Image (cartoon, rainbow, N blue to C red):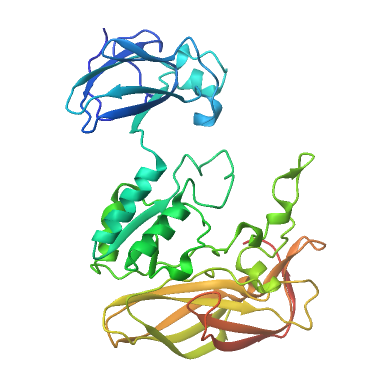
Length: 420
């Protein structure tokens, strides 16, 4: 034996691990632990690894991921396909779990670099008490009925969206849409917290009092969400993308995937909010949008060219009763009658965030090199092209602000340039 250690999780990565005293990175690891269920029932155990593994419960082999391996897609295709086995367990009884793990060098289903350069491999195992969807739904509904207010957490996980593969659907996995609808019927005072890395379909949004888009925020995500819900912190986030109502509204919907191995970027320059403005498709939420527990007012926009820069100043007032932060977003509208190419209706060129106490006003300055504010890439000239003409300037709190402040500037002479 080379080493004795204690691990706190049934999922661990050993990519950079090398046993003390070992002469080569070929080793075997035996793990033992106790599991005491709180509820009697059928428990499903799921396991996957880069290496080999045998899982025993009270000395009986439950999962054989050594002699019956199938190639899976975790770890960029260098892992075994997850195996799921079910075992009956009694509440209060302690079961001995034993795992016999062979490092990544023992994995023979692929010659992927991970098996040679990171021979430690990895192991992951979890469990779930088997319960029917109907039972879980009934429990959620009854819990919602008995509560004054409900915080309902929904979303996806790295099993549904991560690197190396595309999502199969924009819809929430499983029966989550039905769950939300039933809980909203049971208790109208329901706050939805969605944790996903990308937009999901929200058909229930019109009957939802409040929605928190929490994304994937790591180990402190729970504390951050609680701070927002209880008002300890005033939310000030803004969407870094446009949130569509349905998958068919996405700019790349018609050209998604490849055509005989060729990827077609059919959106051209009309990506994100630029597509929605061009097609006049109303998204669920626009780019740059985000609510606050207070309110803000923009005023006194001033736009001018100073030396090589476009300089815009705007006053922002916190008109509410609590401290908060707001983001001023500057969009430039290209000349509509003289431009030589088709361009978006407007383009984001700068932004600035400001913290304001109740009733406080501050002047915010957004400064952008005029060449960046005005230019597009001229393919024929192989240079950036700042066209001559009159440009519009819009400043607001999102790409679809209801109260844009408007300004303008003029470039008297066209300019071709290189570099960034």
